[in-house]
Length: 120
Image (cartoon, rainbow, N blue to C red; front, side, top):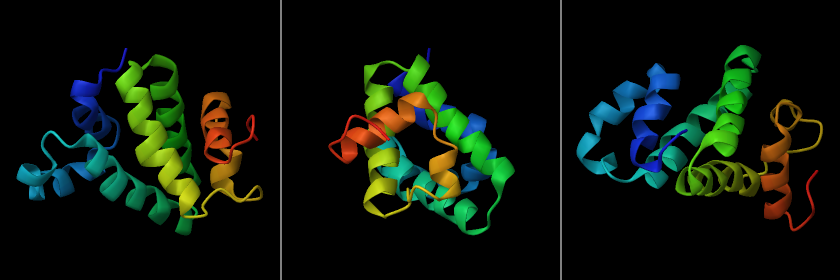
């Protein structure tokens, strides 16, 4: 199970390429996983979408789905609000987009809630 209290640590374990950004501003991000996920992880996701880096995108969306399946209530909310909603409001999930095609079942359900539908 993923626990909210370890959410930044967990993200960095799955994506060590984000560690330097966390360490660079550790005093700012410590205890603020919503800020770190939205400002750093979402930026990373958008960059990988722009680069069409399918291997990394698969890792990203598998991670998101895993949190939604195995995370505690607060971890799930963190991913839904700071990642899925943030990407939705940035217009990332066009139905023909690679990001949309990589969404898992729970991620699609969460995205549908952003869009006030029953899912995509």
